[in-house]
Length: 172
Image (cartoon, rainbow, N blue to C red):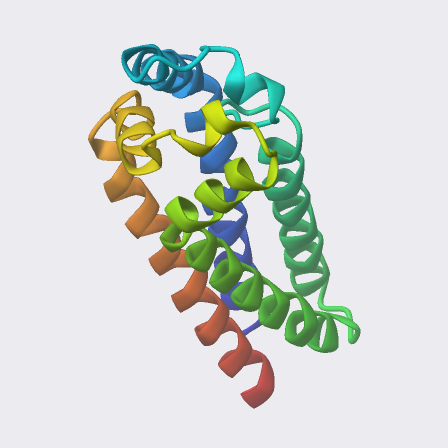
């Protein structure tokens, strides 16, 4: 059972690593399309950089998923080593990764609202008039179409793996 839980944790780690890989490869194109949309809307193209909005793999866009992957690989190692501590570690990390992925999905679904609110908070009238849905749609167009399939697979692996891994750890 420990080997199966370890395999699940390795799959979850791979799912989290996929995010910065895609952002690294296609993030510049997404930023370019977003900046082109800003230009079309008559907004300075530097606005995104000025407010820390980016689509590449820099900063927390890589640090967070790579940290989760490292934690998952550590838990997998504990399982493969057959250590007694592996079981409670599984409970904690799998529950946290499930909840963390809930936050990620929620954030993705509320991106328009949160970006609109962030721009409004700046007090900059130019940012307040940005058509955020159009901006985010153009940014998404900078990524390949298969990216959204990968995102669904990633969520399935993370949510499904966390639930199955937790169940196996509790039963085991």
